[in-house]
Structure formats: C-alpha cells, structure tokens
Image (cartoon, rainbow, N blue to C red):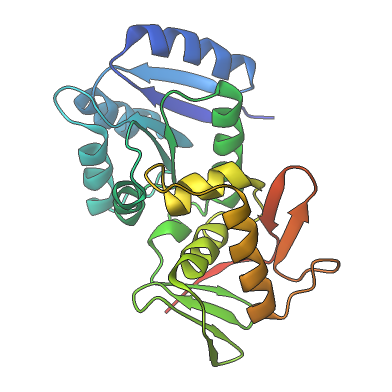
Length: 237
C-alpha cells in the first residue's frame, strides 16, 4: 500500500525534526520545508496528499501560502498549525480554504488523527466542505451564508451556537469530536463555558432534527468520548 505523502512546513527545526520522524513512524512519507516560499516549490514538485502549514513563518506565512494555493485552484488538503485561540480567527482560516486547524502546542497523536480524518473525507481536486456555500445531508440543508438550517424544506429555529455546532460537525463528518474540541472550536478559549454547554446544544439539535439518540440518523454519541456526525455530507448550491 502506498504511504500518503505529507509536506510538513515549519521554520522551527526542533519541531520539524521530532514531528517528521513521528509522522514517518505513523505510516506517512514526510518532506520538510522551512518557509512559505519553499513550501510552494515543494507542493509544485512533490504533489503531496496533504500539507501541514505553520501559520507564523518567515517570507510567506501559512495563511498566505494557503491563499495562493486556493487562488491557483490547487485544493491539496491543508491543515494549519495555529496559535490563535479566538474562534473567529480560526473560522476565517477555514473560510480561506483550510481543511482543518490544530492549536499549538498539540498532542502528536491528535495530529495523526486529524490527518487521517482529512484524508478520508478529501475529494481530489475539489474544494473541502469547509468552503462550501451550503452543506447538505439527505433532507437536511445548512445555508452557511444566511446561517439558516432547513429540514425537508422547513426552516428550523435554532440558536446561533447550535447552528455553529451543526456546521462544525457537518464539515467534519464521520469524525469523533470530543466535547473539549467542540467547545474550543465553536465557543473558543475566550468563552467561559464547560463541556455541559456542548451537551445542551447537542440536545437542542436532536430535538429540532427529530433525531433519536438511541438510533441516530445524524448525531451519534460516543460514550465517554464525544459525538460524531454519521450521515454523509455533500456540498450544496
């Protein structure tokens, strides 16, 4: 079986040396670049299956590399390594075409899990779900511009946080999402909330969707771990 090709881009040598060897042991072929300009050259030559981009780098930062790739129609999956705690800043990065992000410092095992999840849902040559105008799962539709959710053509009355939670889950289908990760992604570090806040909004979504926790169509509970959006998700007009 061919090992996925990963381009790791970070100007911190200590990070790239340790992380590259760890990723290789996890089953990936890894090439390292030290700045944004080198990253663009390597992407053109290597055609990696996924790029791990640090945001803060000399010459070209990670978000500028991402912008140039997407403007050129290159939809190689990109995972950003950030040090930004505010959910609005990270949402902007996803809107620009990142497939996912991970905050520094991070657990290397979490990075591997994110990489594998991105590779599973990646659609070669097509934009990721994170930049879709609308997300569709069967009779469920989330319009990301209007922030409205419809089920069988009927608009659901949801709180803004419930819409944001559903959006994050639909852009990460079939991926185990811990309560801590959902809290961080949707509410952000700046929000003084506990994980029970996530459970409350999940319950709101289930009521609106008519989803049975015992036999879910959309949101599955993974006991002791978190939640998973189990229905297939496609981009919509």
